[in-house]
Image 1 (spheres, rainbow, N blue to C red):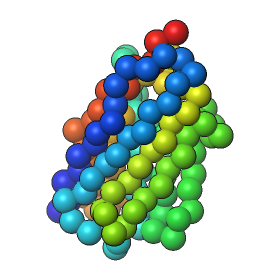
Image 2: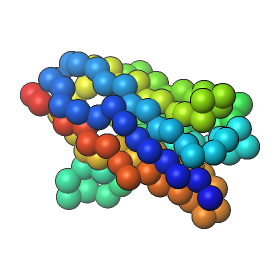
Image 3: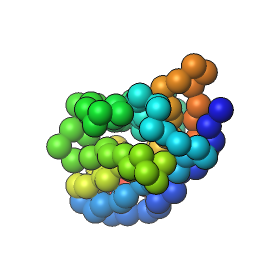
Amino acid sequence: QVQLVESGGGLVQAGGSLSLSCAASRSIFSIVTMEWYRQAPGKQRELVAGITRGGSTNYAGSVRGRFTISRDNGKNTVYLQMNSLKPEDTGVYYCSVLTTPRYWGQGTQVTVSS
């Protein structure tokens, strides 16, 4: 079992930046894939970015080139650097680990004003 705690959300103007963190309650070294999802009001939760233990990354097309996912296994933390934010990036951002079962954090709100 692993508990995940996200932080770093907030209100920012369009074009601004935010950095999210996800701290895990135990070592993430053995966890192959960690991911960030988001859920906008009235929409389904969608994958934003993922990163493997080896550092390979994947991004949703809508954020590629603007967001960067990274992980620090020594600190048991995954990060999401978000630049050039747009109003459509607004939503609750969740950290998740691709394990069986899958675990989720409680989410952190990101609001981008136009």
